[in-house]
Structure formats: C-alpha cells, structure tokens
Image (cartoon, rainbow, N blue to C red; front, side):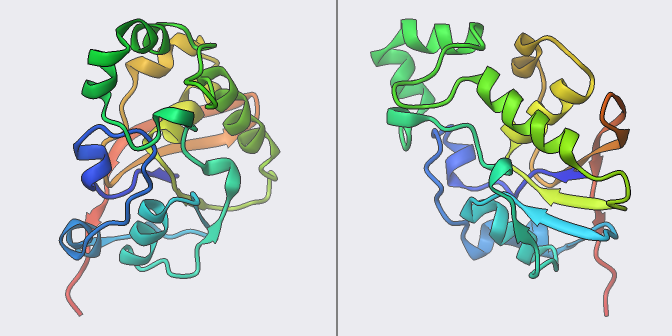
Length: 187
C-alpha cells in the first residue's frame, strides 16, 4: 500500500522537489487518520513523507531511498508556472517525453526503472507493506505494476493522504486506486 503524503506548500504551489517541511496545520489532516495495518512500514526520504508517517502514527517507518521523489535537478525549488513562462519548450518536453530530464535531474523513465526495480525486489513473504511515498513514486509504481507505457505516468494522480494498493507480486499485480484513509477513532 502506497500512501501519498499530506499536502504542503510545495505541492500546493507546484514547486519542484523543494523538500519543504510540513507545518503543524498541514499535518493535522494526517493526524486525524488511522494508518492501515502493516507488517513493514517504509517512507520516502523527503521531510514531507517522514513527517506524514509520524503524523499517521508510524514513527518507526524505515526510510527507503528508492522511494525518493523525481529528481528535478536545477529546477528544484522553482514553480511550474515560473518555468513554463521562462522555459516553455523544456516544460513541454518534460511533460511529453519520458526520457527528457531537467538539467542535472532525472527523467521519468529513470524514475520508473528505479521504482520498478524496488517493487520487483520485494520478497514474496513481505506481508502487508505500507509506504508513505511521493505522488510521483506512487504513479511510477502503478505504471510499472500494470506494465503501462511510460507516457501514462502523466495521466495518473495520487491525491494527498490517499492509499493506492497493489497486491500480488512481480509480473502479476492487481491495483486498487485512491482509497481514502479512515478517520482515527477517539481514544
């Protein structure tokens, strides 16, 4: 199960890979939710993923480098609208060519390979795995699991604090998209 992190300034402003920490107010929606049961809990390396895992009551989540966001290279910290105005050809290429990478960054094809390698390497006896992962990682996992063409990456969305479930194993995955997390029961 892959859970997209809470919505923060970076996602709200469509900034590339800024890794801004979430505020308490941005974490409140996650604190109100109950994390699904899992035998193994992982998190992407970003502050947003780690903080969301903690807010969901998963403070012992192990950081998994393969779940890192798409590397935006020199676009890091810049807004999509800013780049669309200053470098429209580059943004157009990035949104249409899975092999195009921002200067010093990672292309979608490389992200798909990285996430696919991680997904395929999961042991068959891993049990229920829960990973708080960047939306790009969730999309990459779905593209890989369903053997979709790389261009499908841009046609998928992973909304904040939703769970995308993959069941099965390498070469035979089933998908359940966008299940909302359930509210936490009062104690």
